[in-house]
Image (tube, rainbow, N blue to C red; front, side, top):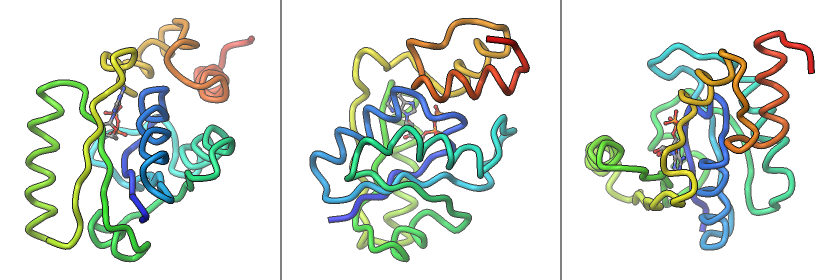
Length: 160
Ligand code: ADP
């Protein structure tokens, strides 16, 4: 069974990766898909977000990486995914994900959403907090994979 894990991944964090790895133990293939045009300001381009995800996921044969710019359920159907994976950190995520699941169910009742409770080590972690810390020259090495920490340094033009 194929599962689609969609997100902005701006950038991918250890929390996202934890969810994808756990999903890949359950599903044959997990497709991490970068949403091309989220309704928010991006730090990394789609190409950069895909490249970082590919670098980070290369150790996991069950995880594939791509980008998309369709409705998520339309893209899920296109790649043959029966399941959409999401992560839940707190009750705020729950409200958003619950609404999204209900809408997706209305749009395509054949596709189910499977939600993974965040790993307690990463339940405080969001891509936006990572961007904020990195912009202020903070240490993000416990929050993101090494390749992402390096990319953030390059983005904010600091020497190693
Ligand atoms: P973010 O909220 O960090 O900007 P995305 O919009 O890319 O991330 O979210 C993609 C999915 O990953 C969402 O379902 C979100 O709830 C989930 N997610 C984000 N951060 C974490 C985390 N630290 N642990 C588990 N799931 C997460």
